[in-house]
Image 1 (cartoon, rainbow, N blue to C red):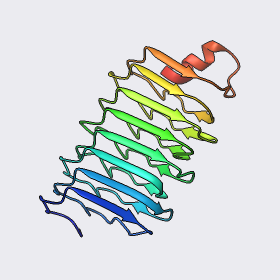
Image 2 (cartoon, rainbow, N blue to C red; image 1 turned 90 degrees about the horizontal axis):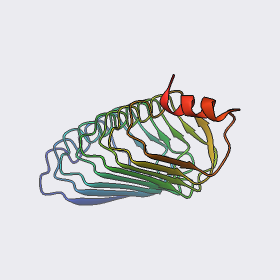
Image 3 (spheres, rainbow, N blue to C red; image 1 turned 135 degrees about the horizontal axis):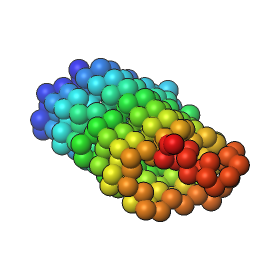
Length: 193
């Protein structure tokens, strides 16, 4: 609870493996957090509970794992992940985050997006670019009705069942082949049976 209840704290830079424990930024006024050069860092469950002013999370060459419910009740609007090839975005880590509108992952931004990681959010833009062997878990983006366009430029290894079930996808662009034989099977994998 190192920065809990600090309403005047607006920006923080995390470097060199500082640990973010349970409720680390609970009820803080934090608006922007940048995590860089912290490859062993884990963002624990509920680290950003009620950090309702949070607007942007940038992970650049830092972070090993974002645990379940780490950002669930935060105000995070934009998530940017880059140069973090071992990052696991855990199950339910952003589920029901009420303000999350954009997710960008570039230059090996993450390794895996867990089940229900971004489910029930108002996310409208998802861009995944230059990622090696990304795994997207089951129902990862379920019930995201504001999603219009999803663009995956390279590197998806596995797309979980019902990954985008109940989403509002208008355009789904993928410039690769994942191991599903027919277009019908691909569509079923994205939306579910």
